[in-house]
Image (cartoon, rainbow, N blue to C red; front, side, top):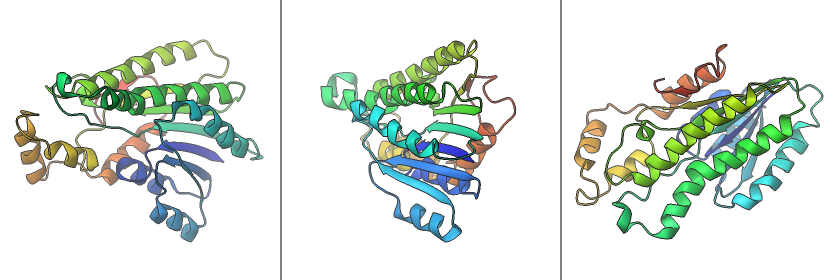
Length: 249
């Protein structure tokens, strides 16, 4: 049995990942603030295993208990072939010059984009330390970590931190007896809620909003389904982890 822990599974890439990973030999743990009932029903129809855990990633101190619950289920499985973590949940806002961003909005952005993935990864490695199985961690980053725009300082900084974190953990795992492999991926520009959000920002707040609107109008955004397919291809690749930061799908 292969296990997959996916954050942000209620919509967008996370939903597409969970949908495409449904399989008789897979058990998918979906983590998001609200349950995706369409996904739950689809799994029932296909008789596939899915466990939904409604959880707010801002609740950083609750992640330890969440992982206790997840691995209590995993450890009851007679045969564990692989465990995969996909830190997919992300938050774009606040999109504004830094002086216009409230302390709460900055904290929430860094919680979702950086601190929650760090704590998820910490727990994942702790709970799988003694398991001699295939262990993979995929962090969904963004080209915004490298290519900077005004009014995206929180998002870019948190994603750049996620890349550095992925590199650091990859180095730590090199000398482990049963190492976990880690990658951070730039998924491209995708037709998700994040893109809709940035297109709704005023040009006074975000000077590049017209370019994002044009890209959407010209049909140049990837679908979540296409993106998920490419991410799964990377996740299952034989050389997973050989390049820690993957900038193109």
